[in-house]
Image 1 (cartoon, rainbow, N blue to C red):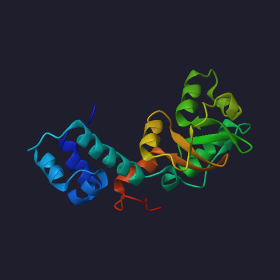
Image 2: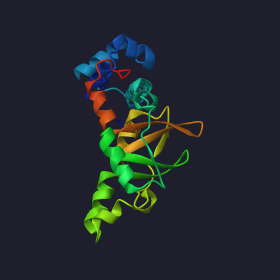
Image 3: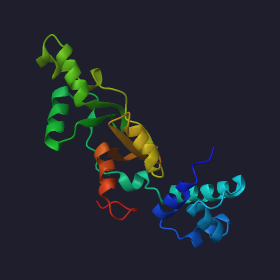
Image 4: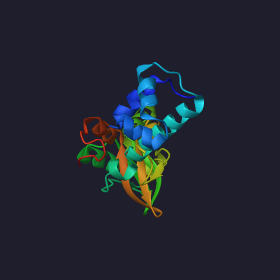
Length: 194
């Protein structure tokens, strides 16, 4: 099922395309696009599909990618470190989540939420600080490639605190929910200001 016809004008304008340019790219005449946007014509399914396919392709190409959102400096903790060290690193850096590694391999995640849950359920909360991170950590953050689009990253961050960026099998960056908020403030629309 195709989106409603009024979406054509909105999406064309968000891509900063003229009707003439959209016509050239989609193989539909400029006058037909103008009539569709005015609501004076009901185009065939094939013409409408051609326009929406063109818009979708352009949106995907102009969408921000993981490599433009990520930070190369990853504040991490090792699985054999103590929970006390994890808390200290969180306090010093201001992060509420940390990826947990064994050497260079991500194996889990440590979040304020997990730490607080363990503190509440512990008989002796002070003992938690002496435990190894691996004994209380959650699953590892999901890993994406440099070309993963913003739409997929935002979906992942709806369920996770962070996303790791991998290149050729190595973790090279991290993206958090705070990084997505920078997209809203970005005025360029194509690259984020770091």
